[in-house]
Image 1 (spheres, rainbow, N blue to C red):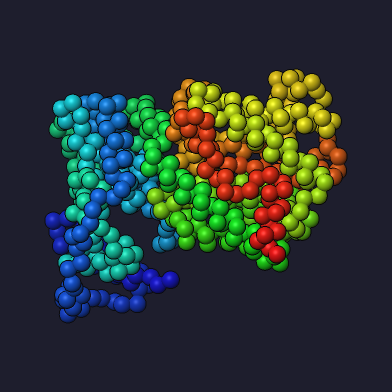
Image 2 (cartoon, rainbow, N blue to C red; image 1 turned 45 degrees about the vertical axis):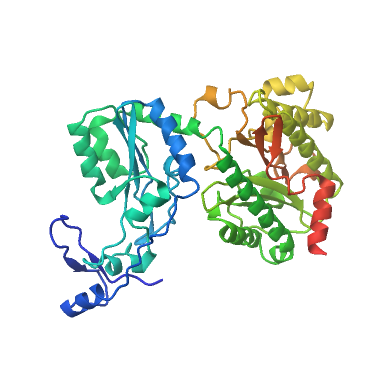
Length: 491
């Protein structure tokens, strides 16, 4: 990785930008002649044949719902900033979910502003324009065009996103001035842009900002047709990723869980933007750790692989799918018994997902089956009603049976309890159903042969008008289907 040698010094916009030497840079200065050479001879690359992005019409409807909820109020939703990984390198940028949902844009430092006007709002964006060819920013700044690539001009962005755009470098000052000159209740989504928050601090309250965040979380509970298509694409790509992993299990056996992680990640980058969360590639007893993301263990034939992974699309919608696979291609008798229990629990949970049902129904249906099996196997004293009432099954089931899914793997997390876990399911909601059984390697309450076995099966379920649709149904689920599928890929 190369490093930029010089960077423009931050000065007042009206003053010419001085160029300062980067510490330990190899060039001591920039000659006037080089400055002139770098300014001249560049073609006009403005894109003039753009059309609005497909998502822009859907984002406009979401902004309309936001406007109706907070009439007469100023609303500010930042995308967030780059975060330093180490020294002068940054983590890959992922725009704030609220901002993406309302704009379709994914650029760093951006800000959506909903300025009250009449009975509604004037919406506009603050964006970073193309890097300046006059002051040398395009080749001197670490975020200049020759270092990180071309970005859209403000005019191009306006066409793609269907919103007016301004230079974000003036955002904090202009927003503060606007708030002073035209007082209105002002709310900002916190936690993404400290500079914007500080500029508006005299005009916002923690409670008011929290209300905005809660509403935006609940706005994502029911997905529109465009979002559902994105989630289907994510599941389809994830199916390919799981297929890749099965085909390369021999290499994983020869190396480690890291091979599995890398194999799935390759598919995620080819088919989409990234993985939607850290892939859980848990072989053997690691499968009993719910979020095993170290992925540095051995992959041994005769044991199980719990793979929990999802592709994030280029529009940032993610799948979240889990399969538990016999590494040698066939379940042994005990593995199959435990797997069948989890499969039956998932079948019961999926059947409970339908419009008009309580959100909690699928969880309770799955837990009922798992508690029955644990009592049947003599691992916990019944009756089953007592086990469920006291939550005793949780020693081996551990987690809830699912969550909302969308732009975040745990989507809508800031929604009110009554709007989420206490809600009634509606068409357009998308949730996971993921029961599991986990017998820790050091659990002396179960027979020795159970210890170190973990099984989870997870699918992404869309609530439809007449029931549900499994978006990840292309991946085999039953024990026989899994074995046949694996055999077809490895023979």
